[in-house]
Image (cartoon, rainbow, N blue to C red; front, top):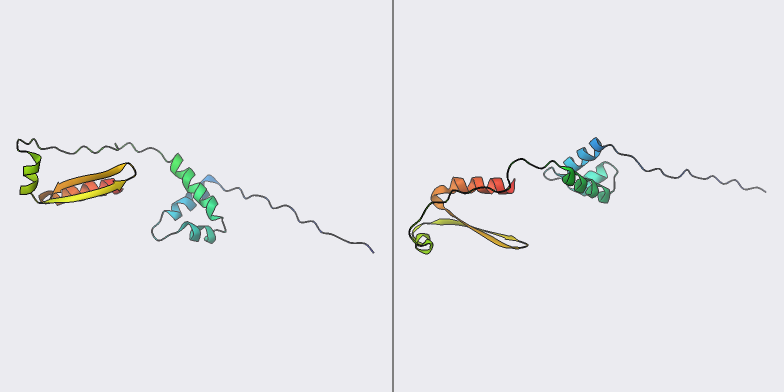
Length: 122
């Protein structure tokens, strides 16, 4: 008696275009989207999608806008401690890996504080 064996063809890796990878990475950045859900939706491995996101961040063009935002400084003659007691202020503490940044902003210029936060968070 003879046996017949069928060999399966080896699975080939899919080759995805740069546009497809960029579209998937962009989909993961949308609000309420998770990498896992986007990966499942397109029958992809989530680790591969994470790799595409890292590659997209590395290859993203560097912004021409400066990372440093100059803040207008008022010339003062009174000690800073005395000024803090007289003016109500908004106090922001931003923890980071190298320390905490503390910003005090006058309540009278709350719109300026909002603009600073918007620029920092965008």
